[in-house]
Image (tube, rainbow, N blue to C red):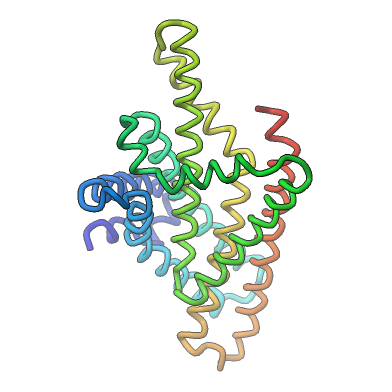
Length: 278
């Protein structure tokens, strides 16, 4: 109860940047507990620990956003309110990602192999895919697949999408951490030593490399997850009997379309922009 009560949706909307530190804290606690108690399965237990910590906030957020659907009339105003929630949830996601990246970059190799075992396997599977248009199609299909799961998980479990998002954050964090470690090794072998300036340069490049297409992609998952959560809460509260339930359905449809737009943008950036920049 202590960790999950540190911040509520009302406070988060006023100071969304605080969610970065909360996501960072959730991750450090999850990493510590998973290594301490469930070391052999730490790569998955860490994700569950992060999910458990973030679940109450995400669920309370969906309830708050569904309430706005019932009391507000203009869809543009409702979407602006939803954007506040998306904003602080994105900060939380970035906090989780940065914590995972730093952990991967700084922890000893034996611990990394245990802590990011499943994430590393996922990254290797993606990297081993055949190059060409098939990869592009698989990449786009994968994004649609995960976004659909975000909607379904939120609809079925209320706030289940947070598990999908926490998993993605750990995978992206592991990829960034691996990029950092690889480049640090290159600097070390070529220069004989590594200064702090080079370290932060490598970290910045690694974070930027995956942020170009990663931010719109994760925004899509949040929009989809929040849409599914709002619809789930509306059904639980039996608001489908209300005349305003049609507004909930319109809001749900618009958020799913926004998510689709972000997915298309993320796929374009990943295929055509990121390879040029990096």
